[in-house]
Amino acid sequence: MIDHSGSCANLLDVDGPFTDALSGFAPRDAQIKMAEAVEKTLAGGHSLVVEAGTGIGKTLAYLVPALRNGERVIISTGTKTLQDQLFFRDIPLVVEALGISVRTALLKGRANYLCLHRMVIARTEGRLPSRDAVTELESVVDWSARTTDGDLSISGVISEESGLLPLVTSTTDNCLGSECPQFDDCFVATARREAQDADVVVVNHHLLFADMAIKQSGFGEVLPGASAFIVDEAHQAPETATRFFSVSISAKQVNDLCRDFLAESAQVSGAMGILREPLADCLQKLREIQLVISERMPERGSWHELVNDEPVRSALQQLDQAIVSLAAAVEKLAGGARGMDGCIERLKELQNRLDRFDSHQTGEEVRWFEKRGRGFALHITPLEVSTAFSNFREMSDASWVFTSATLSVGGDFTHFTSQMGLEEAATLQLDSPFDYPNNALLWLPDDLPEPRDAEFVPALLDRVVPLLEASNGRAFLLFTSHRSLKRAAELLVDRVSFPLFVQGEQPRSLLLEQFRESGEGVLLGSSSFWEGVDVMGDALSLVVIDKLPFAAPDDPVMEARSDSLRRSGGNPFTQLYLPQAVISLKQGAGRLIRDVNDRGVLVICDPRIQTKSYGGVFRESLPPMRKAEDQSEVENFLSE
Image 1 (tube, rainbow, N blue to C red):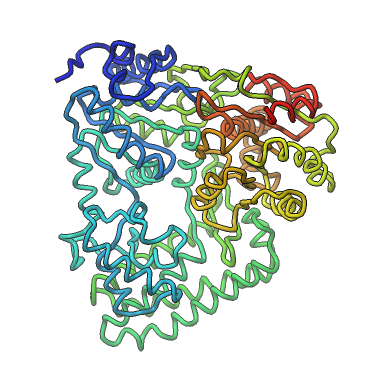
Image 2 (image 1 turned 120 degrees about the vertical axis):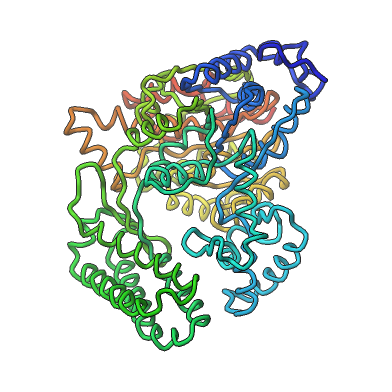
């Protein structure tokens, strides 16, 4: 048994257990500093915000004190991929190295787990979305007999984009709970029981903030109480928290509810005769409002813009009336069956949300809409979540650690801490140990047109194509808009011989896998590729960013927050738009150097980074790369 009574500093030093347990391990001063700060925070019941540059080893820096803490810890990550990495790889490694015994649990949202009851219904009814779904369903049925955890997200038998997925998983709305005929074998219930008994529970931000929203509303909880919370990839936390404190109605919600009413009607005598007509009317009115929004509205806008359009307002009122008529019809079916009662409760909640949109708007929220494919969604979003999150932290009576590679702007954490109500938290900034001056080159072309110019993308490619030839592909081209991405993809097809991997043409995970395997690919991506993507080694040597990633000017939430800041005497650009863009740029730039041996070039094509006074804030927030004087220097660097 290893003696693990020493401090975190000793454990992570050259004579510690990780020298033998982890191949290539070497002590890092920044990692030790972070581990000591986390250890102190957990012991004192305080809050800590840590910006840990790429390569510090922040996962080990918080896992060692967390696993030695002796009390329950909840670790939240930004994605399910990172969740799985923590649970299946990182935590077992640390547990073995320290020679300790820790009960761990992995908990995801219910949409990741197979619902045995709904699988049976899908197989019995046979109303599947496609021919491929028939084959997928049989694969799921075969897998269901072998799985021990029911986690479809790592099963390999069904993709996240599959239309079958909603038919074999449950939601809070359609789950039958303890009255489900398969409840004794329920994977969701089993995962939650294991979480209640565990010392360390690994979740993701979606589950953490969904649980937080449930607690705030006074209902039961999914996550167990804990003495400490560690939030990794914390730069995502404000946006995720905002999403779960919003009230939303979508065309998909209405359509799914009508579909589930039809399915439950088959189980209740006489229900089909009662509901056939009001359900048909509701679906027809839904199609009509989808059509009119599609034809008359922009991609997103304010609630005021939506209801001031007469055809849209009329279609919305007709859908509302159809939902009222459906509610009157289903009253006769209450108490007939658990599934039908669940649909009736969902209908009541839908009506409550519609009533919210009819109520007086407060100055603490913004109401807006967005198109989603052929559908739409309506939102009521809080202008800030800091108060709600502060209340939640006080209620939890726990230590909190927030960490990411991108939390500060020029060394200042104010943007993040004010968003999350963490003004009193201790902060720590630790720079990356990578040798950026020698291994990375920064080029800022100075002869490109302004980003709004129609010729910006063609001019950008004129500069980039020679670099692609010099680097033999192996590049990420990151765009701030799908429109620019699409145009660049069209223009590049005839200009380079390297395989192009374009976001939207295939699932994200498959696109990345094929890019890595190609060895000379060029990947064109937008926002989802700016972060959470690791391509180490020779597969990636060039990252090109088209524009400084300022929020879109038509973003209703940002506009409302700007107005609120102005009313209080603040400056929306310096307090909101600029810091958010800096953090996003840092994320995009972070794709380049992911390992100590990585080498490459970062190209930022937006001339504003040099011509505008605020450009210095962006430049100072980037890693200390050597700046290239001209294109030939870049080509030589890439050709070496």
